Image 1: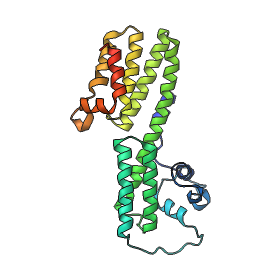
Image 2: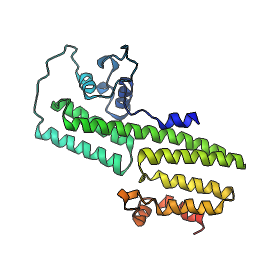
Image 3: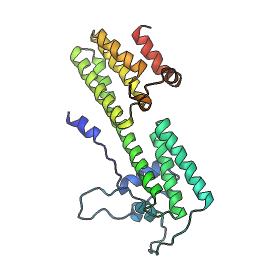
Length: 252
């Protein structure tokens, strides 16, 4: 109970230690990483986690320790084009392909390019990219946390007795709701989880409910695709394995 609540309330802001880890994992080699010595100290009296801000990134990129007065420079056409390409790749990875780690890398690279180009903290694009970065970090956290819950469900399901199957169903349901609420109704892992829920109900002899779950996995939710409902043929072409598993379990 309490574990699942903690899992669903994943952090949406990053502290300086997490920024270091992100760059080490998703950006270029250690020479360009954000070392903690270059970031503002978090050892203040305030217990709140520092937000992931553009000023933190700018300060981390300053190699000289002496603070210089900020000189306003206009971004060049080339830098704007590089930023636009990085953001487009980030958006595609984030919203279309659901590859959150890759999207995080593109957003961080875009912010570093903005730092070099002289964007000011209050620039609307900076605010937008920071929000996207925090959103994608939250999405990756939910994906990882829910995957742990699914693994717990699989362990229960393997025991095959009814009590364990009920526990497995609960675990899959929690993971489904976490991903639906945080990752959106179009996320391709939702039908996979529905297939797993349907399989448990078959094992429990709840065939009518299992078929209802499989139909939902096959046809989708009415609020998918911006409220238009799922394009079934397009989904089947993009997710052939998920669809084939659903049809197999339905006996079709």
